[in-house]
Image 1 (cartoon, rainbow, N blue to C red):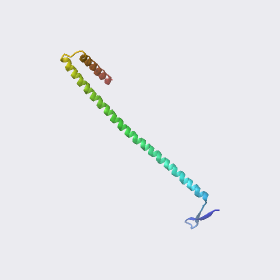
Image 2 (cartoon, rainbow, N blue to C red):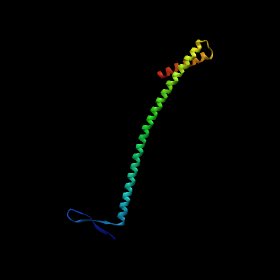
Image 3 (tube, rainbow, N blue to C red):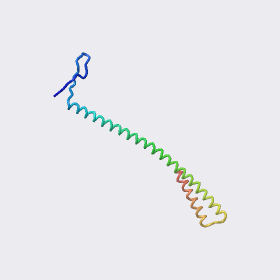
Image 4 (cartoon, rainbow, N blue to C red):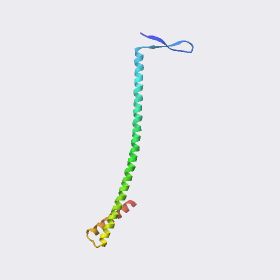
Length: 120
């Protein structure tokens, strides 16, 4: 059974008749549902890419902070080693030998190797 009713009137005055059946309503609902699903999927994909981009930016900032912290730690360690070396040389000048001289030699060798390694 097909029931029709005037839906739109054309410029000539003839009404345009659209026949609504249960099948056409179900088909229209399926099309609307499919479009909604596709749009929702596209929105999720866009949000996922945005989240990845945000994480990349955060990761880069974290890496830069980490690199700066490592540089600062290396600088502090260098200052500490040089301070210890100075103290050991002071002890050596006062006549302390043995382990003091051995420690001085090891620290100077280490600093010399690090200077050559960073120069390459």
